[in-house]
Amino acid sequence: MTSALINTQIFTGQSVLQNHAVIVDSDKVVAVMPQSELPATIERRFDLSGRYLVPGFIDLQVNGGGGVMFNNAPTVEGLRTIASAHRRFGTTGLMPTLITDSFDVMRQAISAVKQAIDEGVPGILGIHLEGPFLNPERKGAHAEEKFCLIDEEGLEVISSLNVGKTIITIAPELTTTDMIKRICDKGITICAGHTGADYEQTCDALAAGVTGFTHLYNAMTPLQSRAPGMVGAALNDENSWFGIIADGFHMHPAAFRVAVAAKQTGGAVLVTDAMSTVGAIDKSFVLDGETIYAVDGRCTNAAGSLAGSDLDMNAAIKNAMKFARVSWVEAVRMASLYPAHAIGLEHQFGRIKSGYQANFVELDEEQNVIGTWISGQRYLSE
Image 1 (cartoon, rainbow, N blue to C red):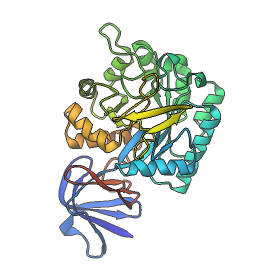
Image 2: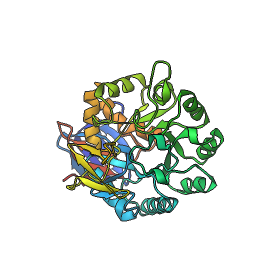
Image 3: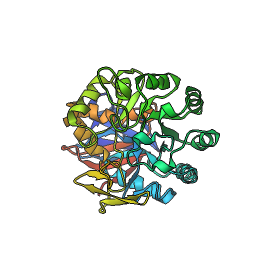
Image 4: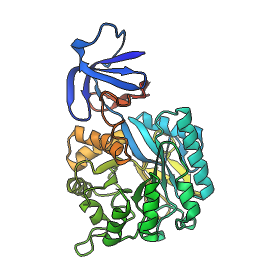
């Protein structure tokens, strides 16, 4: 059935429109037009009471939510709970992220994602495999004993999802440029992270097919005057993107601002790196047998290492505005259009435009989430 979303201020991904309506048929936007020109034949109308309507947020790094960690529940029901928890904060598309684990658990997670996509679980776009091909020198909260090098079996596992999108985070210095090219040829988005790669090694990896960087600044070689490191390569390269966590813990706000200012437009992508505590009452979780606590928004293990975040995407947008001094519409792009482009979905998501997926967020005057739309289906936030 064709529906019209009326009495709303529409940010299309490019500009803000007043006195316009969005026409949705099934799961797609079919038109954005002046409200005065709405055909009388459209009887189903949703009055949004003057609220903002923006493109749905996309999160490329979600470890958990709603009390569920993906590693601990690599199932369709686990994915359903995680996606539902993040939907309350405007995330209409996400890449459930598996922290370093065994090949058996990776296969279970990939199978669950395939089933979830086949069943139409709202919001599941694919999978992000953060490990196990990482450098123990930059392990963070990952289980070092599960790290390994990429071999033929590993390549088979990470390329086994035949629906949706796949992101793999690797330490590029621990493999070859030939293997990076082979992974890239499988249609997989390759990110560098948890790595000791220097500037030159990073540039070689970029040339071979790496296109992204996982949680910039964290678990990678820093920018120094005579050794630019991976951070320098990420900021300098004009064809790649980086995920950045706007929680105030993973980097100083000034460092956040410098990174966003240094990168080309569209290259800074907001991610949450969210753990199970997002959208949950319980502010603790278990990862590889260790209990992690979220205290005042900061998730750390017993060693004091950051272990993901307690951040939701709408909070990330508000923080990005404050930290980077960017406009609200640019911060929304960092959470919608830019992540869509990062995984090759910029012609389906990230805009409110004819032919695009009907994924939206309704926001009040203070930019608080009132509800979301996924594939034309409305979900009100509690």
